[in-house]
Image 1 (spheres, rainbow, N blue to C red):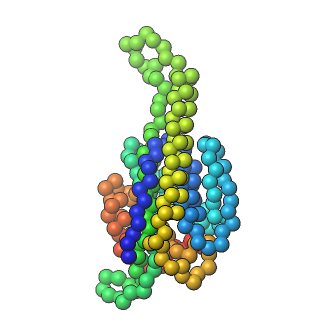
Image 2 (image 1 turned 180 degrees about the vertical axis):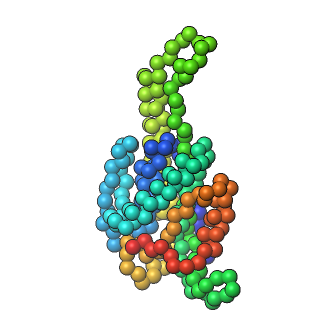
Image 3 (image 1 turned 90 degrees about the horizontal axis):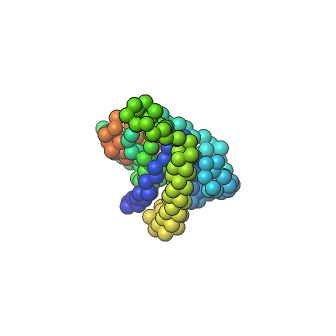
Length: 219
């Protein structure tokens, strides 16, 4: 089975923006891969002039929020590092048991990589410098700088949403037949965040791809 991969444009965000940005992206992807009965719910972002659609499923919202909290905890422990979150869809196949696996096998058919660069909080111009007589007022310039940066992020987030919609609409041939299951999305999924060690994300993804057991269903 071929696995289609979508690398989303990298976004530079501040710590307090992570939750809204990830919620917007993850829900947008899941909504466009929701092949079951959904109850569309428009959500207006508080930080940006952007509206996105959720599937209207409380359990799904809870699972996404839990993953976002885990990711934020990772960011706090690993500052100044670019990070990646992977949302994967897969099929579950029964397999003959052997010494290294049980009967369940995951066949990934689509993976979305969300790339974030979490910027550190910029402090006001240092007033500790005794070498400069020039007093810089951080107020007006800082507000203007943040406004420009916020506008740039909003534009980039819109680009990512259009990227998701374009990919989801154009890439359909690899989507497997819908199994006879109830729920808003018939396929299992997983959201993978960086592991505790910086270089272990790749290995963590490999372990996830080899992982067996009961899948998390979007239902």
